Structure formats: structure tokens, C-alpha cells
Amino acid sequence: MTTGHLIRLPSLSQFVLVVAVLVSVGLVSTAADEPPSKRLLIRCDDVGMSHTVNTAVRELIATGVPFSTSVMIACPWHLEAVEILKANPQIGVGIHLTLNSEWEHYRWGPVLGAAKVPSLVDSGGHFFASEAEFSAADVDLDEVEMELRAQIERALAAGLRVDYLDYHMLTAVSTPELRAIVEGLAEEYGLGLSRYFGEASVSIWAAQPDDKLTTLLKHVRNVQPGLNLLVIHLGMETPEMSAMVDTNNESDPYRVAIHRQAELDAITSPAFRQAIEDAGIELITYRDIVSEMGLEQMSPPDDLTSYDSTFDEGEED
Image 1: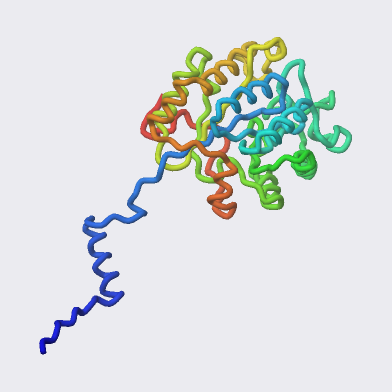
Image 2: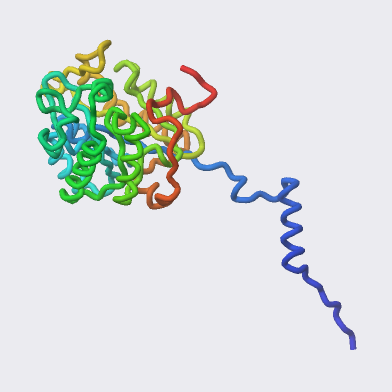
């Protein structure tokens, strides 16, 4: 009668030790070693500002590109924007917290009305035209919180599924005190905050109209592994938008429609879609990010006063 040899298996602790050694010398990789995927959020600002902006958003939706859109609830055309977004639940929705009204002949004021928040308005009862004017005014922070809360409540009452907050002209986060108000409201309502998930962020607004597509494609090529944010401002060359004069853009106040049409043309171009595919970029929305990461992963960024010129930290324009 022959007896077999017993094979003695390593203990769990021995197995873990062997794997750890192999990892340390690079013979075994771990998930942590894998580079993060390239993920891009497209955030379309100022939706609800005008009928033309809303029409441009419809065109972007028709392309099937995943994106998020920030609604200006204080503006007259927000009702049309709500209708569009409720019919397209795949779009991420944010509230573009508004404390400014920057156009020469097209103005708006607080959701609460000027009488309830008098420190937030000019002599005509409209929001101040610039962040500088807002800062120079004797603004009551309690009134700021009341108005921003009213904008959130209006969006929710309209039936929007809101995912995040962001900030028109960055005024609502232009001081530590204002940022604290916005952060508190986000926590209270269980909403995300744009640029609080570690997003590298760029905008193409500063590019000349003829350079919008080139600039956009350059940004796509420079997207880094991790989470990236592209901010766009859509519109069309319609009589409505062509009549709008930007009082905050002294160097080019009369070509708003041309700039915004160029951004729409760039983001809906076959060249953009091809560049995204070639770079292996995943397009996602803020709804995806909030669902995947959770609100507890948010962290205040060091700087919210501007956007970067490129996703590539080693490159300068």
C-alpha cells in the first residue's frame, strides 16, 4: 500500500506576505497602480437666460453628448429651460446661483423681489451688473442667503431634479463669507457643488470666435487622467442675442451672439466627437459624479475666482 505525499498549502498570512513582496518589486500590479481614466464633465452655463440660449441647448441635447447644464432660475426664460430639462432627464441639472444682471438693455432682479432684499439691487431694482459693483455695495449676507435659498426653492418647486449648485460670474463664492453661505445651502439641500469634486477646470470663453474649435480640441488633447471640467456658454446668432451688450466685457461687448454661436458650433462638431473618441475620454454628468462619489467626497478648492487656461499643468498658453 502506497501513501501519497500531503501538499501543505500556505497560510493566509503567508500568502498575503508573498503577494506584498511581488507587488513591491513590480511583478504583480494592483488596481491602485492603474492610471485613473480620463473623465470629462461638460457644464453648459446660463440656461434659462434667454430663448436663444435655450434653443442652443436643445441643439446640444440632439447630438446625444452627455452634459450638465446650469439654470438661471432668476431669469424670465427659466420656465422654458425647466420644460426642456424635464423632458430630457439624462441631462445633469444645476442651479446657476445668480446675484448679477450684466446686460445693457436686458436686466433681471431677485426671485424674492427687490423690496425683500434691497441691499442686493441697484436703483432700478435689478441685480448689480458686475461683481465689482456687488462687492462695493453694502450687501446684507442674510439677504444673500434668503435670495439664494429662494432660487433653489423655485427650481425644486418647478419639478427639476437638481444635482448641484454653481455660481454665475462667480459672485456667490467671491468671498469666504459668501462661500460659507453656498456651502451651507448645498449641505442643507443635499446638493453637489461644481468644482468641489477635484475637477481640473477650463473655459473657452476667452478664445476668439474663429479660435473656439481649435481651443476646444486643444483642451481635449490635454485632458488628464482623473476628473476634468469644461465650461461652455452656448447661444446662436439670432436678433435676440445679437442685441445683447455685455457691460462686463469692455474689449468685446457687442459680439456675444458670435462668441456663443462659435461655442455651440465647436461643441456639436464632428471634430469634437472624434477627438473625444481618439483620446479615450469618458463624458459624464454631475448626476453621475454625485451618485458615484457621494457628497461626502466634496472638498473646497483652493481657488474659485477663475478657470485654468489648460488641463495640462506643464503647458502654458
